[in-house]
Image (cartoon, rainbow, N blue to C red; front, side):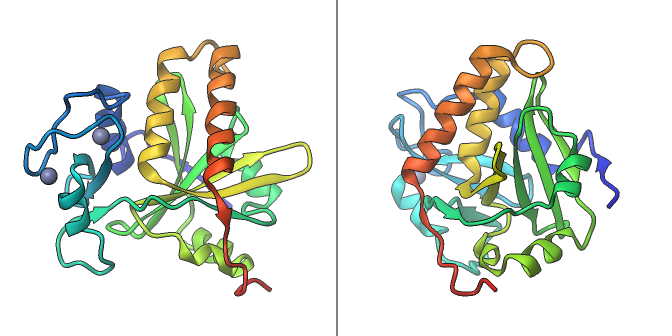
Length: 216
Ligand SMILES: [Zn+2]
Ligand SMILES: [Zn+2]
């Protein structure tokens, strides 16, 4: 399986945005209607510019329906946990992820699967081969519920194998933006690992088991 590094990709523009805004601050406004929004607020992805937009609840709900004609997609708020391993050992090794944690998401505009993981510059990205996602879903049909552009698969390598969760894509970018500010050295250092552990604990707390009825 050949993986090509892609220094500039749609995810990069999302990252630039999350870097400018590593954590939403009180007093922030909805980027659609300019209503003030609180610290905790929802996001919408603009598929054209790949921008992550802060939204108030009413604006968010406008774009929540699947198959909406607009170029905007509401970022779902669900967290799911999956049994088993999403990436085989060989694929994981080829991604050369130094921190033991990566996100995969589907880019519907390019019809590609992108893997990215936190690093000193924000995130490092790899584009998976064209058929990689089909292969993954073929082995784990439950993963087909992942929505392109707005949800990511969080894969964390453990001593026993992998922990695998479906997470909102804005949560991924918030983590990446936060890690960039504390990153030290090659693997991030103590503070970055503590932040990753805290993030992962939060994901586990929020997750409910995915429906594995479709699994073999
Ligand atoms: Zn609004
Ligand atoms: Zn926001």
